[in-house]
Length: 87
Image 1 (cartoon, one colour):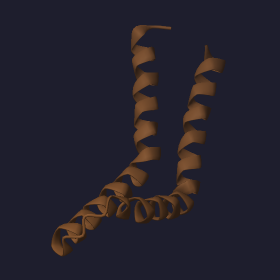
Image 2 (cartoon, helix red, strand yellow):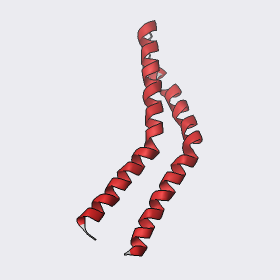
Image 3 (tube, helix red, strand yellow):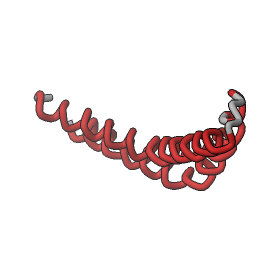
Image 4 (cartoon, helix red, strand yellow):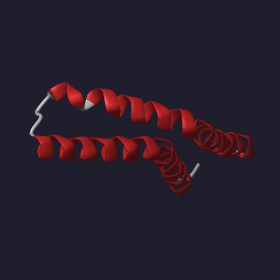
């Protein structure tokens, strides 16, 4: 296995990681910004106010995006398996 092949596998793995975790991170970021704006506008400085809405939003996003995440991981595994079989 050459260095270029290893770099291609690593690049594909990082790209798959971004595709799988991206939707969850974006939703977490958006919910955090909205709650931070709400706290700034109302001057409610409750530390625990962020956690529950963010957990619920990420959980719902995970349920919605689970088929996409599974297909991305399965595709990556198939490419790795083909590379192993192909030599």
